[in-house]
Length: 98
Image 1 (cartoon, rainbow, N blue to C red):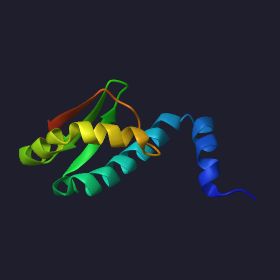
Image 2: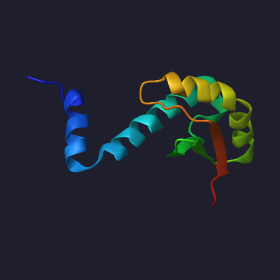
Image 3: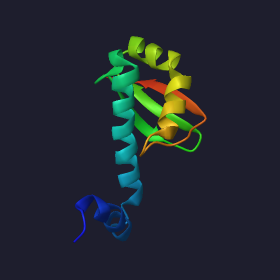
Image 4: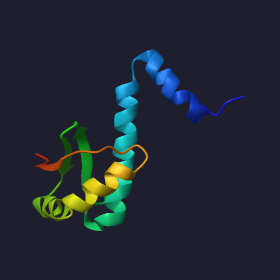
């Protein structure tokens, strides 16, 4: 008998969805990180893309982007240590277009 959570990585790999699962885990981890470290960004910012060189974060308002940018070093360091997180050299902000 195995836990469902233990089966997901193997199943995702079999179905060719490993990258999507990795991004989903990173997105969830980053959301928790923002909630804890930048409360103004809770619900107003989200991980958009994750590349080896940068974390791309989409924000709803420029003021939220500024707060996230001010905490970029702290966020990058903390994200690298989280389960589901990753190490990146930079954090880039993009403002959502309406």
